[in-house]
Length: 302
Ligand code: GDP
Ligand code: ZN
Image 1: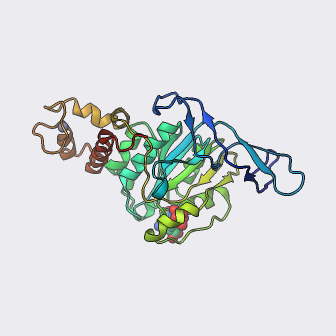
Image 2: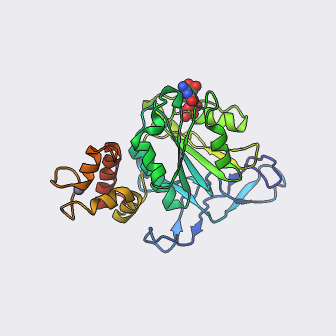
């Protein structure tokens, strides 16, 4: 934990801490107050008690400006977990390997938007596939108005453009383990980050104990390295969230013959037509369908 004067201290919370957050601007939670899990997240502002003798104690958690919430797994499935607090932006890192899983990217983007963070995409390891910047499924993000950065962290390509975007901000980095987050962050911060060797099948157990860390950027600004996850459970997802987020598909769908078109087998489906014409990535449509289905069954209602 970093003090206002830059010194690092270890501190433990006193008992159970709770933040009662004012109702979010967008009325996406049913309660008029939003009570977060009691543990302190990376990025939180806290009040410490006077460290007289022994370890300082966290007495209070300050209300969060933004939050990236994720549904935690296992016994605590229903409980929101705050991955990072007070971040301005979320950089979702993908690469040709491990393979891009668009649905996970979209879940991160949706969670960021819901929590007040600005999402952006970082496509790393472009040295392995120089055609990536033309990929339809990735350019869709740029077309929707999000920042998309193409990098090769190993040779520094694209990093100055990314650094420019990070200056003066608190940016959380997320993505599947192995995409190159640590390599990117080591290059940007000058700090050698520990590269975790985790096999995908052991990832679930590890991520619970793996903590995020904040690093200073030389030009001002902060970055947070969050543990790689295979799945990202959303807390709350409405049909409207999905349709607003996939604005390109929603626009195309207005031309479908049926109002309730699922864009799968229907004749005269404008969305399928766009896929066949090479204007819409099939993977993007699949991700949309998956998220829409989820929002309809209300599986993710609190
Ligand atoms: P993390 O798990 O997301 O933190 O990924 P790492 O930073 O540990 O990188 C995983 C592997 O990808 C390492 O072997 C890196 O050397 C490699 N890597 C990272 N960036 C690049 C890149 O731009 N190009 C290539 N070819 N390999 C990279
Ligand atoms: Zn359709």
